[in-house]
Image: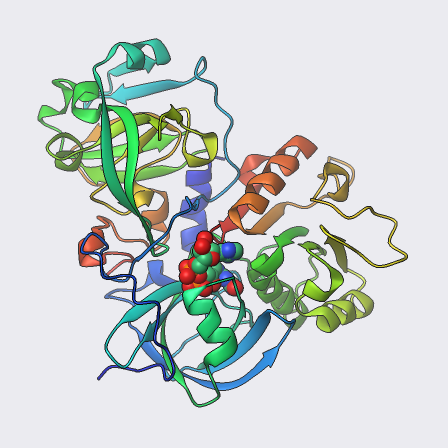
Length: 199
Length: 263
Ligand SMILES: Cc1cc2nc3c(=O)[nH]c(=O)nc-3n(C[C@H](O)[C@H](O)[C@H](O)COP(=O)(O)OP(=O)(O)OC[C@H]3O[C@@H](n4cnc5c(N)ncnc54)[C@H](O)[C@@H]3O)c2cc1C
């Protein structure tokens, strides 16, 4: 029982198999954020990794620069229905940041400058492709897109790829983050169109 | 208070939206009852949506168009009207070459159908239960969710002072022009300021141009109560610029809520 919009033909350009259902390709780089873009310099940037027992390991910018980095090209998908194909980045794998910390934890709560949070299963950060990214298309990552450094988890909707990351807390239980508290899906798989609670 | 704590508070006290329900938010068929042009580019669509149970001003819906051959396209649009049963008004501004906005502004006729899903967005919203002065800053079609808030403010018994700063290319690009004029005339606590980026009216004292810091009222202090909430909406470039100016003007980041419409 589908509702047809009379007279709608569409551009018919969403047939690339890399575009998930309900998404369309964009050539710009739109922004989804709840408030103003925080201004954080590389000098003041820090990432606190908090283990299950509360022990904190702090990563400063030089620590991130010393870690093995890689260039990678991925497709990204925003819940507001745009997808961007073949975006290229540089970053450090989250599994290299967590090291042997994440062995017992089940979930991560990611924290950011500006107070934003998001939650993910640990497996999505260490067994799948996930990075702390700091370059986009060969340049330093702009603050509007999450610079100096953001999480990038391309297999989930982009709100999970927290901008301005400054903390990863390891937990045994799942705790909803910012958008997840406001009605967005707890997991956010774009191929299953998990946009909102209950999808 | 951090944005997160505020978010949790917001979800408990302000949400009439998805956070409070169970099961998926369903797609509802909607039929165009009437439409009117607001400017040469912007059109308001009055949709009958059986089963729609209302929303909080500032929230949006996802719209889905389906072609004869099954091809679909989906976009987000803010609700322009205050909350109502079984009815939703959207205002869409056509973008050059836009797949969905061109259909909605130029092709769709009364009686035609689409699907909507919502209400969505639990953060960018205002309800009459929220006390205190409000500053709205909109660029282009970003005025749409701000208009929903203004309409709710007028309709409700709220006495919160509202100030709208609305930036548009020229006077011809101002959406809701007569309704905004009338709101400003009849409600002493509602102040409407229009700014033009390209060209203004002959007797304007302000040079046309992008939003400037002096276009923004100062935030309140202990003596004068200034805006306690600021909502900024429009194209990404506008929102980034306006939010930065607001922070420079002395507003707290945690009081500024933003909605970015895309490019
Ligand atoms: C939460 C939310 C609420 C929104 N509310 C409204 C609303 O109330 N009214 C409204 O008119 N729009 C609103 N939008 C924007 C809307 O979702 C679409 O992005 C817009 O209508 C363009 O879609 P399209 O299919 O016509 O263009 P597309 O086919 O997607 O794009 C065509 C071209 O236009 C450019 N483009 C895309 N969006 C814009 C833009 N906003 N301005 C200028 N150029 C653009 C693209 O770069 C592209 O080159 C909202 C967006 C979001 C995320």
